[in-house]
Every structure is written in structure tokens, then in C-alpha cells.
Image 1: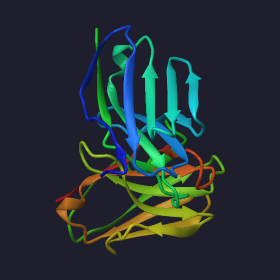
Image 2: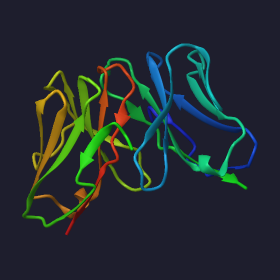
Image 3: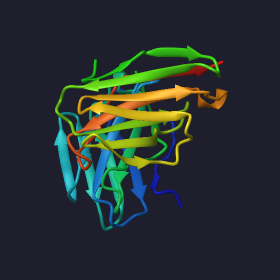
Amino acid sequence: QKEVEQNSGPLSVPEGAIASLNCTYSDRGSQSFFWYRQYSGKSPELIMFIYSNGDKEDGRFTAQLNKASQYVSLLIRDSQPSDSATYLCAARLSGGYQKVTFGIGTKLQVIP
Amino acid sequence: DTEVTQTPKHLVMGMTNKKSLKCEQHMGHRAMYWYKQKAKKPPELMFVYSYEKLSINESVPSRFSPECPNSSLLNLHLHALQPEDSALYLCASSQDGGQPQHFGDGTRLSIL
């Protein structure tokens, strides 16, 4: 079982819709979770991080964490074609204070 | 543009060459990281420096040699690389080991 799992996609949503990106993790002791956006040929860009159960909102982005279900999600409201990218979920696993483990990433396509 | 600056942006080298990748940040971050990323794969951790000391080496071959001259600079010295080492090399930094990591634009390395 991979430590951080994501569906590689592509996930296609129409412009203006809500994109829902999901991630599960195997280590119940994981403490911190991160979402990065990576455009093709570019480096990852941090867009959200979440440490506590519940929702965290920043503009059009909402990160959701459910530690009981070992589930993290990223919602993108009013999706734009410029949101088309690969979204990497990352987790700081227990015992790995300085190490972040990445999922394979979900490719999002926003259709105009 | 990111606050983590990597040079050069592109590097082509032969298998017998010696070259160095450089990374600089002026955010006062005390943890710095080297990652390797192949196409359609997530970033793969290579090294972590915390307070200028090497704290994690993910069993990286000795042809990659990291160096942290001071808290703002991180180098990766390359020698006798193999064609399979061709990849995007990413530097990241964080306030400390537990905080979100911010990536530079990367160096795209090609080994002939």
C-alpha cells in the first residue's frame, strides 16, 4: 500500500464547476498535509496546507482533512482553465519530521 | 518567480563532467532540501539540511554530493552522472523541518 494515494486522473470538469481532488494516506500518525499545484514543465507551488480536522479555506480553494478516515481533499470553486495542472498531495508521516511524502498527483483539466 | 532561486535553469553535461547546481533563499528558512523529479512522477527526496547540517540522505549515490555553505545557500555537486540521472532537480526550503516547503523553479539536467 502506498503511503499517500491519489487517482492520477485526468479529472475533467467544466469551467465554473467545483473540482474535487482526493487523497488518502496510510499512516494514521501523519500530522501535516499539503497541496501543491504543478504546471507542466514547472516546479510545484504550495497552495494549501492543513494540520487539523475540518475545513480550511483560502479564496477559491478549500482543503478538508478527516484524520479518522485518513482522507484529505482539495476543492476548487469556480474552476478556471488556468487551474488545469497536476495537483500533488503530500503528507508529513509520523516519525518523519523533515520528510514529506508525495502522492503521484492528479491531473486536472478544466474545459472551457 | 519564486523566493527560492536555482541556477542554472538548464544544464547539459557529459558523463565525465563535474558541475554544480546552486540554490539560494533569503527567507530566513533553516531547512533546505534537494529533490529529483522524473517526468510524470512526484518529487523524490534526496537530501535535507537542517540548520546547515545534513540530516537526511535518502541513500543517494555518491556521484551526488550536497553542500550547505551557509543558511542561505545549498549546492549539489555532480560528478560522473549516468543518463538515468537526467531529471528536474528541485530545491526547496522551509522555516524549519515541520513547516510547508517552498520550491525553486528547478534545474533541468540532461546527461549525454
